[in-house]
Length: 274
Image (cartoon, rainbow, N blue to C red; front, side, top):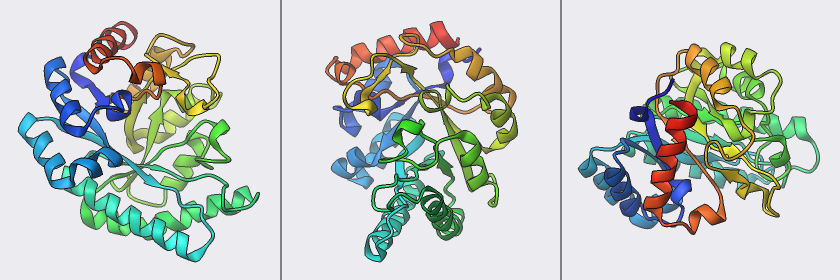
């Protein structure tokens, strides 16, 4: 259903590779796009990161990440907004398809979940005009509810869409990550509702038992409990024809040689989604 010509490496999958190493790895593996992370881009330098992907002829499918909008302290909130404007500038320089936004959790916001979500909406009101002027698309990523306290108060695709709808779809869309949305009984309806709001499609599997650090409980496509074709079909039906990133946080996979990880990534992608 989805060919290898649309496969992209999200740099988190080979977290220990620098930008240059990840770019070279994609070239060796015949992968045409890469989702970059700001930490590695910062370590390499923005100008060198731009030059590396240009030399390789790679497309930048995403830049991860902006967001973390839920601080209530005025100085912390101002710092977060300044950092997000820098992230938009970086995404523009890289010509990334989308700047992924993770909203931030309840930490620093007490226990008032509706108020924290309102802070996310307020931040989008401030950032969307800047992103539009910069030619950057923002992608709101909902995270699984287990991350609501510390990482992301936007827990469902429906909530992400509600936040995106006030803005042009070319400026604010949503990110569909199988790890975070596979459990949602309303997923098919929300994917149909999303239409051209889908700015990025990311895949990895849900493996159990979860590790002590829940963030690292991801596996290669096909190693866990997610039915990828069942999710990919409505994503395609909604009209999404962009890159499909494999994004895996897993200590064992990070310790595996990167070229081996990319070979496995291609094989499992072709088996489960092709």
